[in-house]
Image 1: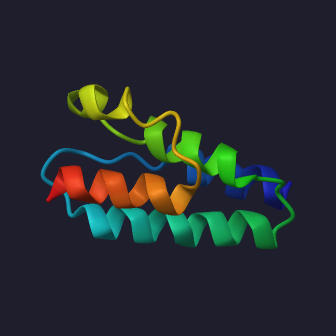
Image 2: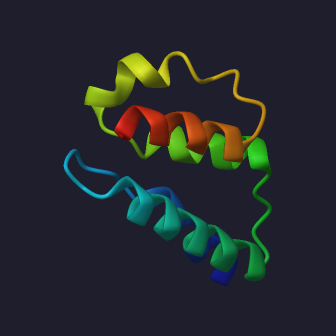
Length: 84
């Protein structure tokens, strides 16, 4: 049950335009760590989809170009460049 709750919390995090992107990513990583520690099975590929789905519609033009990212770190770097 703890793994299910932690996974749901992770997937429930949403970024809103105007927020600090670094804080958003930090929150995602903290919730990911909590979910993994609780026993959830979340691959890096799944985490990438969680990151992309946490973004608002206004980010759709950049999101559409990033589905081929090879790692969550590469994805975050590209998104951070867009945010800056």
